[in-house]
Image (cartoon, rainbow over all chains, first blue to last red):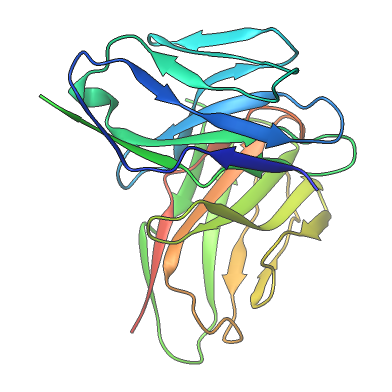
Length: 112
Length: 112
């Protein structure tokens, strides 16, 4: 079945450091790919998405590119801020055969 | 404002009691979902519905029940058969099952 593997956390960075959170997937078909963010005590919210191979999603300085050849969708940001501290989830959209699938989440803490 | 609401924010369950968590959306979305999140864990799908009067079991449906009598409402009942119900419960909706999911703020269920 479909699956998502995310880089294990927690990840701790200093402010202005470069961020990469790895995400790889296994899927039947060609699902859309998503990154969601969850702040403490809240629900998830969409950070960015890509709907087909080679698409780049971007939002608030975060970027991720849909790489079909490596089945990856790594999240990057050039300079993190304390306010970026949250849990980040990589997700596959549903394919014709199945339902959407979420990774286990990666906790990011940014220190001033 | 369009959105998805969950109530209550906190819910306490006594031994042997059934409790119902509310989820309402005014986004005119066809698909709705219930997830369970345990501390430091990812999301696990309990039930989902793609259309009114229809729903499917997710990965951990045992001890839970749902109904979808109206497009905007998808309540979740945690029955006494669910022996370990303490968790954070998240409801979500989407236009279609392949699209971006919009999450509510969550309900935290605690056992007395």
